[in-house]
Amino acid sequence: MANTLIPIEERILTPAEVAKLDARRRHGQLLIVIGFQFTIISVLLTLWSGQDLTYSPGWAHPVFYWNCFTALVALVCFMRGLQMRKGLNEFFSY
Image (tube, rainbow, N blue to C red; front, side):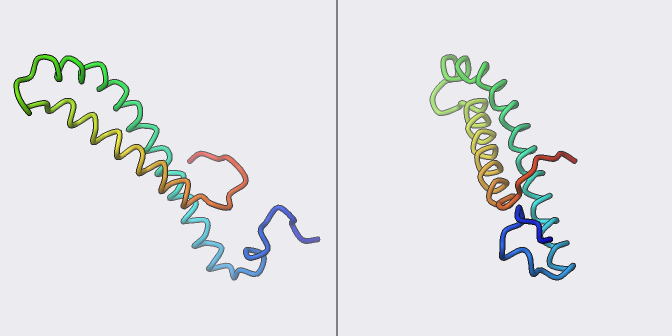
């Protein structure tokens, strides 16, 4: 009996194509984990960003820029990871 949880377009894949699909989904899961890690770092940097914006002169705000960069990396990793995991109907962690 066919597995109805598998999308129709994935039911006719060859073993090599299935391996490639699994690898793509594992890479997506990895990017989601990296996104969570960067989110934690970004939240912690938020504590110092206010002080950096208050006391650093002119445009010299390295902690604020670092915080913006880590937040951007987290967002990109989340978006790309979710896009790569498309079609996965289970949760797992490596």
